[in-house]
Structures are given as C-alpha cells and as structure tokens.
Image 1 (cartoon, rainbow, N blue to C red):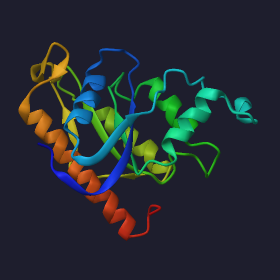
Image 2: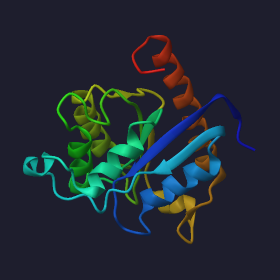
Image 3: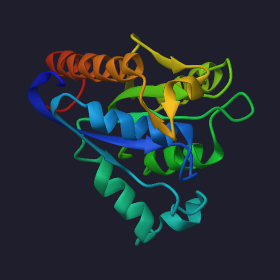
Image 4: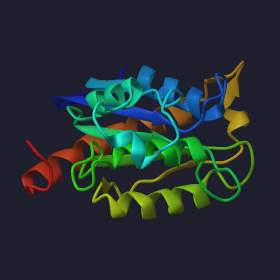
Length: 195
C-alpha cells in the first residue's frame, strides 16, 4: 500500500505523446495507480492545443489554451512524462510548454516544482530528451527536482499487455513521488513557490 504524504498535493501531469498506447502514457497510468495517499495526479491534455502563434494570444485565448492554464495554475507541481524523439523532446510537448510559458513572465508553468519521467523501448531511456527538457524548464524558472531521476531503458521488459507490472518499477514510481512531495515542501520552506 502506498505511503501517506504529510499534506495533500494536487499534481498535474503532461504526457509528451499523443499515442493512446504509448510507453510514457502507460508510465503515467502506473504513477497514478501507485501514488502515495494524499497525492492526486490529473492529466493536462495537450492534443487539442493549437500550434503556438503569438497572434492567438489576443483575448480571448483559444478554449484549449484557457483550459490548459486553468488546470495548471492551482497545481502544487507538474510531472512530465516524455518520450525521446530524435535526441530531444516531442514537438507536441514543446508546443505545450510554449503555451504554458505565456503570457511572458506570468505563464501557468512559471516557477512550478517539476519532476521528469521517461521510459523508452531502447537503451537511451530518454536521457537526452530529459537533458533538453531540463534546459527549457530552467528558462521558465521551474524548479526541477535534481535527484533522484527516473530514466527507464528497455521499458518493454517491465510491461505486460501495455501495462507496467514490474514491482520494482512500480515501487520506484512511488519512491519518486514521495521524493517529489519532499521537494515541494523544501521549496515552500525556502519561499520559492507559493504556499
């Protein structure tokens, strides 16, 4: 049974793949299932976001963008589940981040605590994508948890019928979420994120 967190946390997740049965979507589902008591994880859909275009920023914003911001703003933290495409993050994920960074200096993603997950069928485990993502998030003053990291190569070995069933992986997800809860509390104590 997942451990209890000392305060309730509302986390939002951005899955960087639009594929219904992607490895990283399955990883997100597993994280929801093993989240410690007191931690709620909700997905912020990105598939309906238009291509970022500053011409669309004049009020009213597109409905999908308004909904995107409305889900992120009250969250205590953001979880990214990213594949690796061509040594970097997927274009749909970058597009979501671009919308989340706006308006300049007051985007919904700005200064949020963040944790990054990535799983891949090959040996990279999304290491290069995560490095690029950390660089992007730093520009938004997001507080990415430095350690522990979650990079899962050969993810298919931990899955059955598209579901992460490996107990070690599921335990690691719980441990990561517990560590992220501690990270959020540390940032609050340092007054780096809103209480």
